[in-house]
Image 1 (cartoon, rainbow, N blue to C red):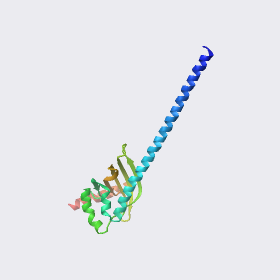
Image 2 (tube, one colour):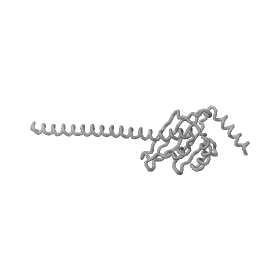
Image 3 (tube, rainbow, N blue to C red):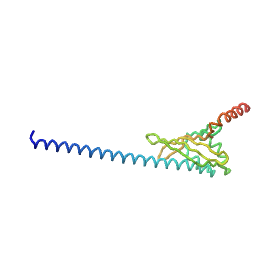
Image 4 (tube, rainbow, N blue to C red):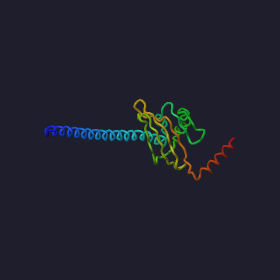
Length: 182
């Protein structure tokens, strides 16, 4: 094979290798930028959802019922700490409004929170540990929907976490309470 032909083949191979390397580098750089942008978007979404949840707790503590209930969707569900407390938002509003109208709210302060999103970023769910001076540690969890350019709480559940070492005694007391109630 003549030397000129070998040089041409070698030149073409080098160009192909370089083109592949450049394309891979560009693709990796684009993927990194995309991943960074997606993380930035998720961080911003987390801030938006956290703001709604922070407002929820602030409005409850300040007994601002109207602002509090505006954070919920029209078909929201609120589950309280008592087994009987599974309310539509209208039922919960009927329960809470007399307290709010007297300036009485409830003060739960966030100590830890996790927020997650659906792949289309239209649903968020969360869990949070809360502190209340009367009850101590409690847990809130729930779901938010993104509709009409805003986040609304669709489901909220407040619980009192029980340490595993105390669960048998607490549940025994609850069973006894339920038995004596009837």
